[in-house]
Image (cartoon, rainbow, N blue to C red; front, side):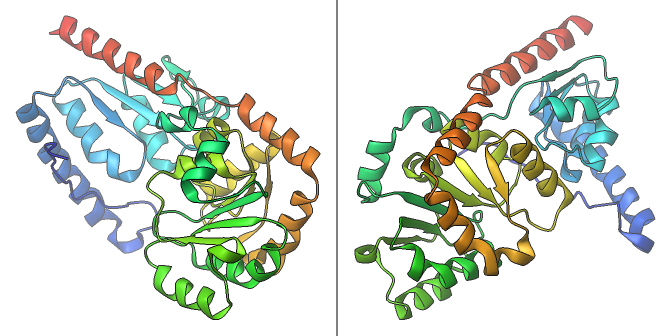
Length: 316
């Protein structure tokens, strides 16, 4: 997009075993590179999002006396986020649970999870029209940009049965798209039966706006996108503790059900079918999701960035 870009060679430390000393040293060396690049850019602030990739950038910012805003997207702050929080000027958390888990940072606040404006602007009728869907119920199945193998296998197993109850928008991901397409063709699945397959959906907001039920992983983005779209969900957390915590949070809020990854191939069809046959429950889940929406999240984070930039100028 024409933006200046520099990559840093950050590496994970936790769980790296005998490689841990080498990885710590590599991150420290990358921190000096980060400091040099930040000075060259004339950076006024650093926005970090908490993963281990953020560590050299935040350390480099501290060396250069550049203020840092740390955004913690997941419900459960990861090891890197907990490490970086005390080094950050301000900390924004996507949920009140994450804010509490960060402890006693003097400048932590709940921002919500920022999502693109389209999630607030597209209505169901327009979304369905753009995707070539009719008025029957719609299930969106999306496992992320690269896809989720088990989710795709489960969808192929149950789609021939589910298309009698709903239209399916299946985003298979770039990694799996070719074989999913072949398998779907062999099963006789296509738009004429209400099965719509995509490699990737750049405007995921379209798919969510069109859907009555969303089946997806539980990455941090679900904390923002499902509430913004106001959609009920079946969450299939990946094998990561952060996804499990995100899913539990949304279940506790009453807007989702969890389907364990190891059970998805056996249980996806019955779970989806049960929800589709309970429109009042779907509606209640959607309303609870919408109650979590934070339409000002991006502006809140931007205002915090501007504030620490101004503080940094006054300090100099």
